[in-house]
Length: 464
Ligand code: C2O
Ligand code: CU
Ligand code: CU
Image (spheres, protein in one colour):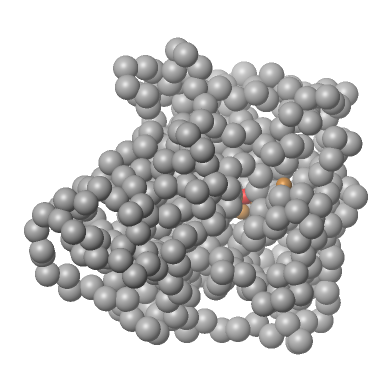
């Protein structure tokens, strides 16, 4: 019966006072009272239905990042859930998003309002992967995620479960996110008062909003005890804007601390070894670290080589003293990964991401709800080419893609596997190959620097 193939969840979005910094209270916007929100665990192909009730005092939108999701449940930026308190009417929701005279243009037609709650349906007809859910409200995604609206959604499948990888308490989803705090412990974020949308201020946030405290799963610079065994770390960069270069310090003898087994879209065909990982906002790296390569009692720091001072540190693993037997391995063959052939592409489309004090655009256009930048045919292979004048992590909804080339050469070290977000540095060009499937409707392409996104570096694509 339908009931037996559906998992149902209810999440109440509400304000909560959390102790993030010792002895201080931080008022957070939460999924169900915690930051990160509850980790949802699903089986591939098993429908997951999540009812979100909004007890916050502003509108929200929920997006499942990396989800292969029908348009109606994808979290379009104007598909708002209004506060259950009735504090907002359509007029106020509109004028908020429009951001006054300097804001984005939109018309009533693109609004899709739910009063108090909305039910999202996720078929999850997709591979095992580390997904995450977060707010996606037009003009306010940066604010809402910074305030706490983010959580993991893990999908498992049989192919993955057959592998002898670390599991249970040795399978650690790690959400890395920087934040700033005021002296009283409250989250400090500039655009709460719409500064981001004000000309002259835009320039101060060219790089997005960066924090000076690094949180992992909501805790500052945590310490995690590990045995001298393999661990699977599902690294997610949930920062608004910060790019990290992660390394273990000390490196294990012989290097290659991280054995990458998966990316945004699930398992790689074969493991890839790295000394360091460059991880842009929204990217996921699924890696295995073998702590038996360290001497008993070693304190292993996860550091950020792109940071300095407080942002150079992420967390620490304190290695135990025993020598337990490890039943896990990382096989040389992990998964069947079909390669999409870019030569079979029916269309090549170009997307130019340009940011300046004049505005943040894709192909010269700021986001306007209802205006399609592309109309891909479902089932057709396409090559999408991204270029940029600035640093932008580019993200597509609906389906994952494979990187074909970077700057007309082979894909880079961090481009392996199925991805939904690809990082571009200034003046780079990246080609990806993709095929959108199953769901006709409106989906998003955008920069996942959340301040760039909120400053309108986003567009619709419509599958048909
Ligand atoms: Cu993670 Cu459209 O976003
Ligand atoms: Cu997404
Ligand atoms: Cu950007």
